[in-house]
Length: 97
Ligand SMILES: [Zn+2]
Image (cartoon, protein in one colour):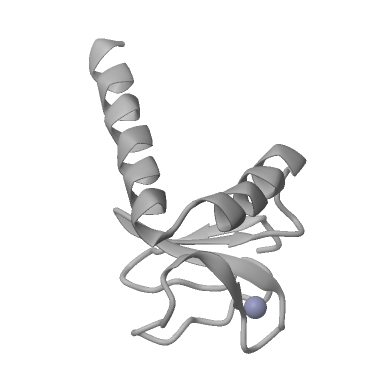
């Protein structure tokens, strides 16, 4: 644990800071700030093929600044569009390598 992110595994998402398992139906799955109810860290929880948690303060500075930018500049739909565009790009890159 104590990474800056956590990715759903075996149908469960555990907090990257304290390891506590998030409840099954986490509310507010978007790029807006969430809080781990166990350890209180601020994070973003979103769905990107799998559930993903990013611990905002522990993330590398460019990612932290990117998240802050997205929170201010993008709405939920634009954020989803951004993720699916990155995904499309990533898939193309993996297919070509
Ligand atoms: Zn936690």
